[in-house]
Length: 192
Image 1: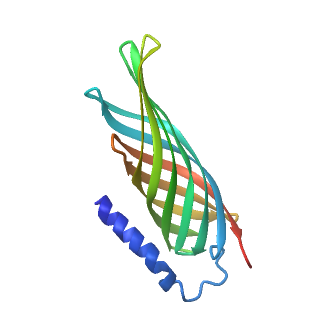
Image 2 (image 1 turned 180 degrees about the vertical axis):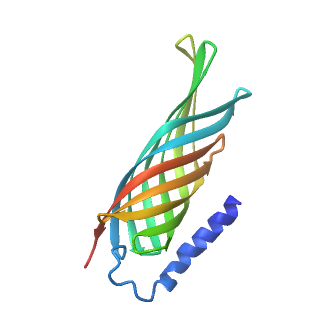
């Protein structure tokens, strides 16, 4: 399903310049620089030493991008996935993650102030798993990699900025990450 969603989003993003060749005068999104920040809950699911790990942490992100028209934009940013901690008897397992990403966004306006969008791209991530027993670190493992990231969301224009509610998904080689977040995007028109 995710592969199909990614193919559809990439196809829509590639086709958007052709669709947009018509009239999009007066729309703030044409040739616009984007700067934004976001906060989210990062739900992490994995298995550690045959034990299920299903916790969440608070994620923060900063990003920038370029909006070519009302249907297509590119964004890149830094995402701190937060700390997810699973407590057990006399210890805990803690997973920290972060990454940089580059994505293409395809947007479908519903009204002048509301749109739905999808994103597809890649995230280069680092993660660290720490096991503590009696408050002493007993095991530490660092991993990194590059994996696809996908998302869908709803964006509303409020006082010239975009407020977005989004769901993102990434399947890393050792864990799945589901992020539900809220972000604000400031739009800076270029060349008007």
